[in-house]
Amino acid sequence: MIKEILDPRFQRLDVFKAQHTAPTQALDQLPTYEVFVLLKEDGQYQHEGIVHAPDNEMAFIFAKEQYSRRMTCAGIWTIETPNIFVSDYSENKISIYDSVEASSSHGSENYKIFHMLKRGKQHKYAGTVKANNAEHALQVAKATFDISKPILNVWVAKSSDFYESTEEDKQIWNTLPEKTFREAIDYKGQAKIEEFLKNKKQ
Amino acid sequence: MYGGGNTFEKIKAKDPHEEDPILLAAFEARIERGEKIEPTDWMPELYRKQLIRMIEQHAHSEIIGALPEGTWITRAPGFKRKLALMAKVQDEVGHAQLLYSAAETLGKPREAMIDDLLTGKSKYSNIFNYPAYTWADSAFISWLVDAGAIVNQVANSKGSYGPYSRALERICIEEAFHLKFGHHCVIHLATGTPTQRNMMQEALNRWWPPMQHFFGPPDKVSAHTKVLMKWKVKMLSNDDTRQQWLDMYVPKIWELGLTLPDDKLRKNEDTGKWEYTEPDWDEFKRVINGDGPCNAERIAVRKTAEERGRWVRKAILNKEANYVQPLA
Image (cartoon, rainbow over all chains, first blue to last red; front, side, top):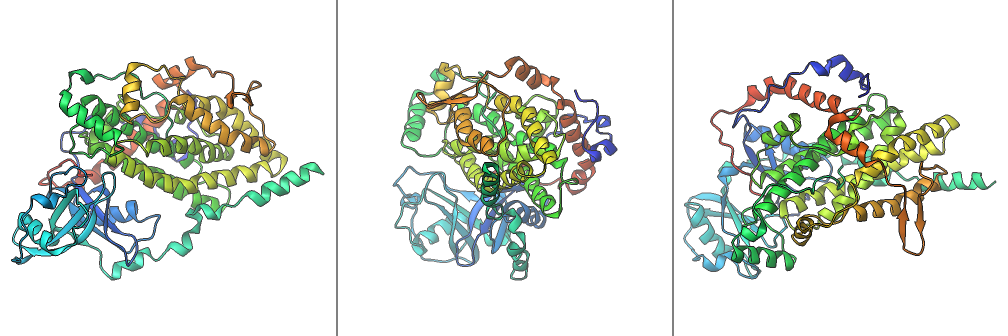
């Protein structure tokens, strides 16, 4: 063991005094929110992962750091995990909609529909339908969306359960031009290596 | 940042022969077809447990791996280096979160994983138990340790578990900047003043043995590892990972006129393989089991963070909320 901690911040904190009074109690944990991100204005929202948060608004703040820190972003939706209804997974080439009866009668509430087209890929936003409940939303979706390609899995959730970023929020993501230091392209070293090799030869 | 290494020793789980043969056959056929496994699919117990342990250790490695470099943020030479290093460390912590999430889809809550890290029940990459004495050590980590992790992560992103692959694809995109940034730092030191050059050389000498340990001991191909390779959990052997890394980076180190502290290190042109002196595997075991230069400090820092953040977590905890397993 080295005698001295090298990080001055940790020296000041006197870290060895920390008492971790061990296993966190069951459920001493924040619930999870599923995060959907719109990478570009003309793109499609897609599922990117989860965050742990106390509520939807904090989930949005964490999601902003976690999922829109590095790439472009035009919008984020978050929703608490249990609010999403999940269909079964079908086998390849069989669509989940094959076992759903299409319905042309609409309901009064908005539901967002997400489709998974390939295992290993993200769920993508297909659109919103008006329905009475999640099951009905699936039936309306069958009659509404292009489902010519087999859909392997569907997520359905009430639009009102989402936290959605607003038009005004978009300026948060308008920072990429100032952050080129986070891009690989900003670190070109070849010229310096060549100069070094040339000087060495002389 | 994570190497292969020590995650493939046998774990306690139902032997694949005891699983339902019909379900097992369908599961294996799916992997054979190149399809990914998603969280709600049936999977053998061994697959689930091995993946939890692997992804969890990967996550811990990211979070602990941020510490030796984090040490250098305040003392990084110049504003631009500070910005970049801060962004890199932030990425690493973000990667830990992505990986914890992927492991959570298999049924182990994030809090349980963090508890296991703090109690020492679950491990992280051994290399982070070594100290970063100088800025050149930090540059070594950014370039070469990340490079080792990328070799492993690119391979694992082609593995069979959907959520882990998705997390890794994202991680690999973000790591591209780390690698170039690290190389840039090393180039500047190596082509700088004699003092800078010397500093870089000393860092290389110090980190060479743990870097060789990073890829793990030579593989024993047991029945256990064969199953994990068939299930696309383990994608590359420790030796393959090490060879790939040596092949890509040793020439780049030598190009800068730096040396490596191993007389036997050379590429055998006949076999196409690198030859090297076996590192001290006893030291590797000793450090993994807690007796490294920084093991105690790394865990103490995490415990401090846990302790000092407790009031915040308590304040925002929503008592009515129900934790459920995330979807994907």
